Length: 149
Image (cartoon, rainbow, N blue to C red; front, top):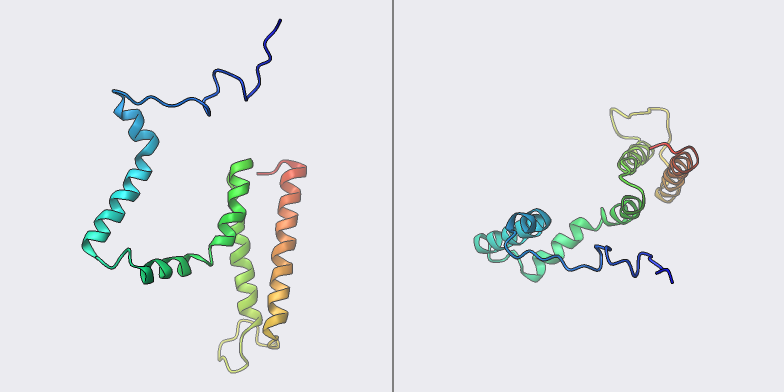
């Protein structure tokens, strides 16, 4: 009777294997060096600045990184499933320029578009969300349909 080998019962599946690092420090360092650097950096910064791991400091770090979290979560799925997608940063930059152009005050001396009227904030937010979504849809469609990377 033939054995049924799939990813769950394959003895060569590395996801289920424990890695044995006994006597092999170079492989351990290669696989875990980033974590070691992060821990060492946290310890050094905590020694130099004792308030680094305080509650206000951690809240400040979280609040400063909160703006990048939706972008990072959106890109994480793409990176995990297919590879790196570098277009999201460009789309964010484009819609930031569009929103800055549309929100210029009439009192500015050097307006980017002098004849463009100032728009309400909620209209600009909806407009740049639509522009970003449309460009993202076109980008995703071309990537999946035409295998453009």
